[in-house]
Length: 140
Ligand SMILES: [Cu+2]
Image (tube, rainbow, N blue to C red; front, side, top):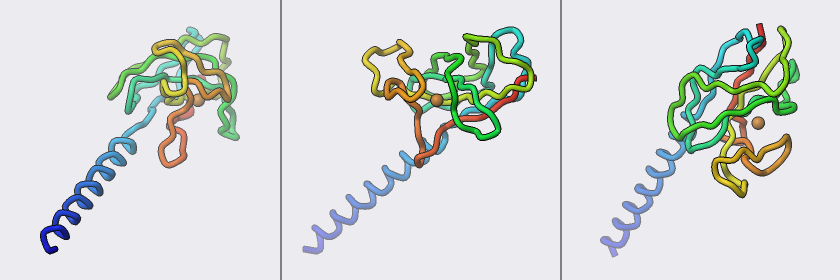
């Protein structure tokens, strides 16, 4: 009886440790970028930490901080990505705001093909604790 109890405790402890390790790796996901000149037709995220291969998605946004239409995307690898550049599909004027968001490959039908459009489930946003992984930059 005592041995069984010990085994149960060990299993519980191992499970707890695994879930904490998982939470820690998810919490590490982030998108970083600065305000920048985008008149050259591109926008760059300085650093992105992704939990899996996926996408940097560029949404238009404004002071309400809601993700708007998609105006660019770029592929990401699992782990750290630095200086990730997306080509903008339309001009973005000085003073306009862009949301740089981490999206995954989940829900799509093709790997390596960008299938997301605003509101779609394919290649949708990654959420950590129900929050989007993103940053907002302003075009200089
Ligand atoms: Cu998004």
